[in-house]
Amino acid sequence: MEPLIALEGVWLEYPGEKNAPATTILKDINLTIAENDIVALLGPSGCGKSTLIRLVAGLIKPTKGTVKFHGKAVDGICPGVAMVFQNFALFPWLTVCGNIHLPLKQAGLSDDEVNRRTQHALEMVGLTGYDTVYPRELSGGMKQRVGIARALAANPEVLCMDEPFSALDVLTAESLRNELGRLCADPNNPLRTMISVTHNIEEAVYLAKRIIVLAAHPGRVALDLANTLPYPRNPESPEFRVVMEKIHKILTHHELPDAATQSAEDSADHGHTPRVSGVTIGEVLGLVSLCSEKPADIFELADELHEDFDSMLKVVRAAELLGLATTPEDEIILTPLGVQLQTASIAERKTLLAERMTTLPLYQRLREYLHKAPDRTVDVDTFHASLNSWYPNHDIAPLARTIVSWGRYTDLLAFDSKKKTVQALV
Image 1 (cartoon, rainbow, N blue to C red):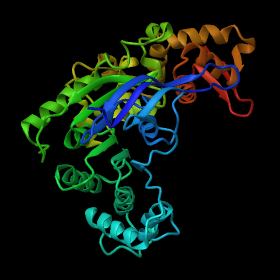
Image 2: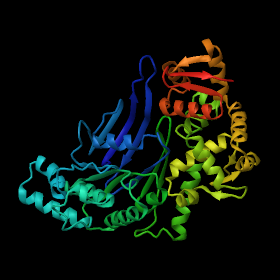
Image 3: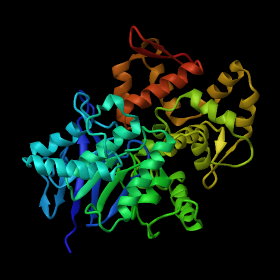
Image 4: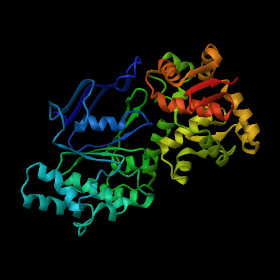
């Protein structure tokens, strides 16, 4: 039987600035989705989860390969796919009904059909009676319900959702997940195929029949896991927790991003430095202050802090990279250096972290490179170009900001914001 959606040898690349090489976002994606599949996409930041569903919806075109819907290549917006965006994407000057009516009227439907679909969609998401309300009068959760209703009103064959609950408070997100879970379990609901990007493991296990984990730099399919738990699902059940734990271990271990397609430079640095780009020293110190020599579950820690698992994992990896923590299984334990850092003065912390940074292969290479420059100084564009040549498959801007901020904190690097230069101090 022909799949509903097929991605065949799909690549997506963005051209580099000036003479820099292109950045590969997705690499050789081969994936099929059948009718009635409910798929969750998990993976670290930068692995291309959101990009992938935009390819399915026809919002962007692949650089290479083909996206097919019902066996035909997608060329432009795919009429059978509806999108729900993370930031609601509502028109503030239109009422709730106006936001839902607009795409239906553009599709040429009659007024009666537009009204019928709108009311049915509002009923499904629990917003009956809010027809004339404007987005500014709604809470975040209600705005997201409108976004879901607008997508459902189009009667799509496939609903694509890009982290639809991440901007919401915990209780509202849980309420909407339950609502969507009810729709998934309802045999009378005509929409039976969904693809959801999420960073929340519990959400993925609660909703999805298949959990696809992407590895990063470049994005690629690392695992396609069937979730056979029957609906409705109970997050407190032992069976549910077993599936969650399995995914936790996959995401907290190195086999995902590191093993398959590292460059030589990535391997020299164990792939760690690029994957912690965007993490601040303050976040690392905050994590160290919360931990101890006793094991702490990374997922439970993220849950307690109301942090998404992906962001928490990056901070944990940064602490591990600096020798402040170890991560056996899916737990974090402070090293003796991490324990020492907890009680150290600010000056002592800077000295300890500086000593650790000078052992990192990337910093050693950077120091050697800067020491060859006049006054040990290069302009930011040259600095970025060098990083890009070392890590061609990574987003260089956040990596550069991380390196500079860590170097400034430890007095290893200086940054002149007026001249836009980076200088080695040691």
